[in-house]
Image (cartoon, rainbow, N blue to C red):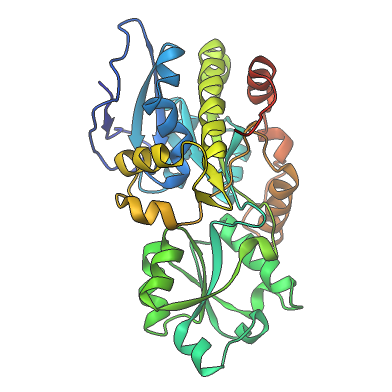
Length: 348
């Protein structure tokens, strides 16, 4: 039995509790691994590994703990209350590391695949149809929605503005969660937004916005999310952590087999659509078939240059003041060992 539950924490993590039944019975001698998720499509590697029995094969019992945001995983990960998490490499994460909280970035969870990005720059349909905003340059002095200050989307917006000779401060930022972007674009509260799937597909279908371009146009292969290990999991439970990574890489390779031009239309694609409809917060299989999915490196490799670029931006903005470095947080040893055991990826 696999459960998703509330994590009680004196560190103040807000968690959403749900419960599901696992696809297969877990062996009695399996070792439990707590895995923080946000129930998003980008959690697909974890979902596939459970649904297809890769965790079971490694003697792992997944204990999914559902958070409403990735940022709230940091404190319980740092305290060793969670083994595995997945979220954006944000200013908050780097500040926590600088304060002595030990967390490791160990694998790619999601990136904006060049040529098929799952994040896009949207323009209010009213402004687009009127001709007032036809390019990124036309956003100067206008409001743009991003998910939050000190997050990856802020760095993405910076790159977008730089690409047309503007600066980050040439637009007014409005911090909104992706589900709120539709209303803000439709009622004119913002002129544009940096939005992720499935919200992109839903907003365009609703007629609230025009998709100007994918984020890969100005920031290709941006590292939007990573798999995180607690220090305790990476050291005291290292053999178990390696088993987790082997299962995760297998699952991520299945995901890559299924992706063709950003859609789940390749080998095993329909099976993954059904897994996501069961596990994630996107329940409509038709939506899952039509949205552009994120990129996830089949060998787990992270885009280190992207991580460094974002950290440099956070520091420029004053969101990170300490001397923390990407290298201080990075640990590629687990994916390297998994790939050595499994061999190089070959797409089916």
